[in-house]
Image (cartoon, rainbow, N blue to C red; front, side, top):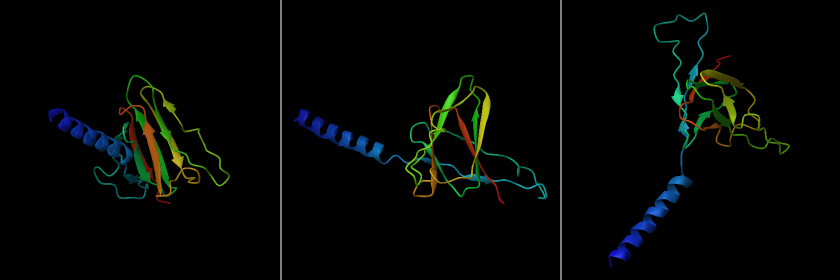
Length: 143
């Protein structure tokens, strides 16, 4: 009987693990509105939050075509990130941001104003990385 119970629990555990992988949800990033120089700045207004890359589930953010992706690598070793591409109207994929290497202790920045081939059906841009030491910031241009 003990073996029978263990097998049942093992089967339940395997199913739960499979569902967890199948339904993994990306960590959502929130864009920070870029302030203009005619704005009456108060303390803390110009701070740019960053979020550690979720190297297990990935990250996502809502894309309007006015976002700047800033990737900070504070580590002493290079790390990579990927912006997930999908087929454009001609069936082409853009792999230029697949496994993009950010050198040690440096930044990578790209303006994601072209959404064709990048924005998913749900309106999001998907990000992945090989290390949670990378930090993502999303800056949204207001004009």
